[in-house]
Length: 79
Image (tube, rainbow, N blue to C red; front, side, top):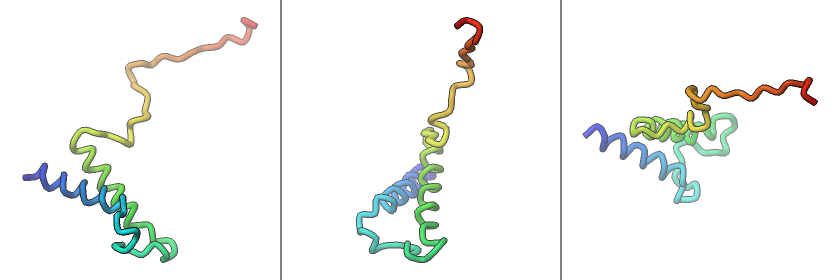
């Protein structure tokens, strides 16, 4: 039941971000200065949390693997 609820929340966030109604359905109108995009930011945060629950960790997708630990050292005297 918990997985279904989290899946539904993630699906709602993805559909909200996809914006199939072309901006007709907005929790906070985008033309309000400074706070107009907070609803989209909340939907992104919700979607990222739901994806992380299912094992897809997008914020860390571009992080280097700690086990690789390989660095390239260039000696300037070799020129």
